[in-house]
Length: 325
Image (cartoon, rainbow, N blue to C red):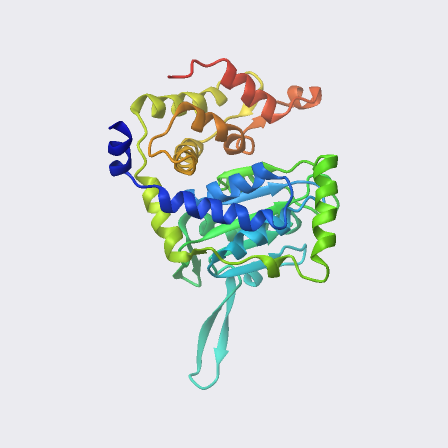
């Protein structure tokens, strides 16, 4: 009887099928990296942007392109370089001699899924061109506002090891990413499977094997469905308390902003929906706490000197709290 009521309350069949389809398409190419794939899909459904950090060669860019290819929507890639200008991203007015007027020619940022590769290679002036777009889904150029197409998502990659010719992302920009995903090396077995898989593909391109399984209109509808997920008041209070703890912790110099609380709520709603539930549990919140918070806190200098990581501090905070049940 309870199962019947649950089905009538919210039908998540289409969402579950969509998630399974995207995962199956990506698994044709990517071996392992399940956490990265899961979080990118979560962000897609939660209407958030993703920063992917990892050493070269761990399939950051490829995975982002595969997710974009699995959605039947506009896709563009911007390779950030030290000489890239804001107009190269946003677009620029071009003079039309016939009409004797300037017409705005949109840049590559005007798409549905935008891959910003090596985002930390561009200077602050160019990085700041993304601030309004990522938060407000619009760009103001020469006093005129241009709305971004819906759905809109930025997937950015960066290399944490190489420092030459890179620029640290400002905190204001980091705060606009729903998740920061850190990508580890694959295990030896996964790497062997990867070699076997690519060998069997022969001359076929990896992207050629991926088929779009989700239309842009479906993404918009699924996002709306996720916003209506049920989350109890005690869980909202738990999210607020968790974020507040980052502002009062002895190891943290700068705590997370209220935007982090909203990110935690939205990400946990999407996580619950992907599990086939129309209500959020504490485990949903805890499963996304680290990728939501790790780029939003700054450790105190003494803790950085000790080699303590943001992930370890977040784990300490979570373990010290009473989790509602």
